[in-house]
Length: 224
Ligand SMILES: Nc1ncnc2c1ncn2[C@@H]1O[C@H](COP(=O)(O)OP(=O)(O)OP(=O)(O)O)[C@@H](O)[C@H]1O
Ligand SMILES: [Mg+2]
Image (cartoon, rainbow, N blue to C red):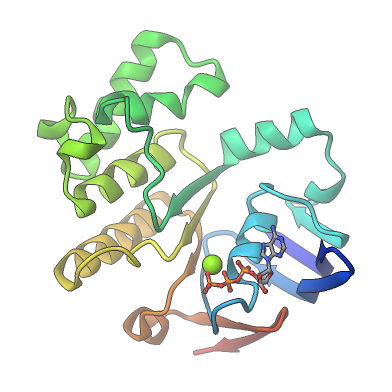
C-alpha cells in the first residue's frame, strides 16, 4: 500500500516558487482503484510522478509497502520503477523506431529477463490487449487506440503491482476512449493491481469507489 505524508513538491522558477503539491496526505490500499481529477495545473501529474518514483518530493514521505521512495538511492528507485510500477501516458510514449513487439519487450530489459522469455511474454501481453496481429507494426503504422494498447501491454508485461495512468484517453476519440477505459479496468481487476488514473472523464469518476480531487496542490478524497 501507499502511504503519503506531508508531501510537498516545490518548483523554483527564478525567484518564484510553485508548490505543485502543498502537503499531501494520502493512503492507497493494495488492489484499490483511485481516480484523480481536478483543474489543469492542480498537481495531478506531479502526484503520479511521486507515486511512480519518477521524481522525488521536496519534503514529506512517499511510502510504498513501508519503503520511503523519497529516500531510496537512485539505483534502488530505478529498480522499483522497472519492476513494480507500470505507466500509461496520454501520448503513448512508444519508441518510434521499435515495432509493437519490441516496444513491449523493452520493458523487460532492465529486469534482466532473457531474450527468449522476453519474446514469449511480450507476445502474450500483446495478445491479452487484442493486438497479436499487429506485433510487427511500428507505432506510426498503428491507430491511436492501438498505440495505447501497446503501451498498456508494455506496462503490464512486467507484472507490476501498481498501474499508473495519466489521462490515458486524452488523445483518443470517444469510441476508442470507452475501449481503452474498459481494457484498463479489466486489467486492474484481473491482475489485482493498485490502479491510479488521472482523468477528466466523469463517467469513470462516477464508477470509481474513491475519487481524489487536487486543487492548487491540495488533495481531497471522496468515497463513493
Ligand atoms: N518542471 C516544472 N518546473 C516548474 N513548474 C512545474 C514543473 N512541472 C510542473 N510545474 C507546475 O506545477 C503545477 C502542477 O503541474 P501538474 O503538471 O502536476 O498539473 P496537472 O494537474 O497534471 O495539470 P494538467 O491537467 O494540465 O495536466 C503547475 O502549476 C505547473 O506549472
Ligand atoms: Mg497533467
